[in-house]
Figure 1 (cartoon, rainbow, N blue to C red):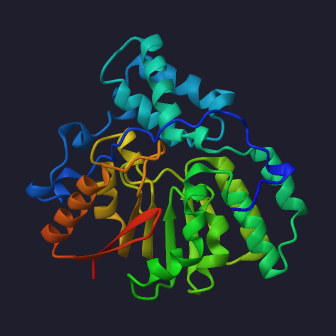
Figure 2 (figure 1 turned 90 degrees about the vertical axis):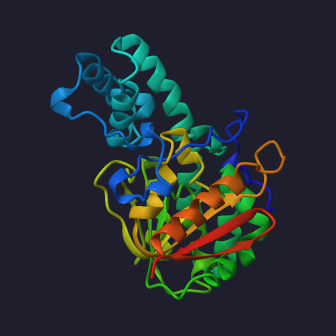
Length: 316
């Protein structure tokens, strides 16, 4: 792995384990009984008109807080409304939501300083393909998830695209720093890449990079787990994010895979947890996806790299 240059000095925070597994609320009517999600996942959030004063107060406080200025307001509101079912005390509700936000936003996984990354991007030589890839490796080392992928990066997209027909559009859900792997993606595909993230920091960094290197691609600041949100593409990617969605609502990952308007969806999981041990939660999630595919009449396939398991769902 390329050593981190002075511009990309790690922030120094200890990196905790992956957030607890969980998922986004499915549209329970759209899921077969055999693939039904926990009741807590299927329940819809209360309408704004019916919100308690505590919920309204905490939404207003947290969306205005400087600490969460980069988190999409819909993400904050969704967490507040769901935690608001457990308490009507504003102070307790805010405490619970702040704890949730720490896990959901997972800013501790970004080990480089965003401001330093932005300045380094402005100075980077991105014209030469080899220099561009070397610099991108340095950036990817600044986030725990993409750093894990570095040893497999040269074979990652050939393996992934070996599972699916050639797409024209790719939607990368919860992309974080993964837009900096687009130079590798473009070595095997001409697909237009569109990333989605609820963190404006990642959106700004990704768009600044793509504007200079792949102007046909973009990152969108959107919250894709809230009800009614639609993402359309030939290929949807949930790269090491399915199990993290479980930190928000049990069943979220399965529901999102089910409702994505994508002909193919590739879900990936780390082969090891952050403590270095085997990722024991993976077989259960793979079986969930396989069961969903069977119930829907879809096919599925799988490939494994040293650092990452890939499961492809083929909707047709």
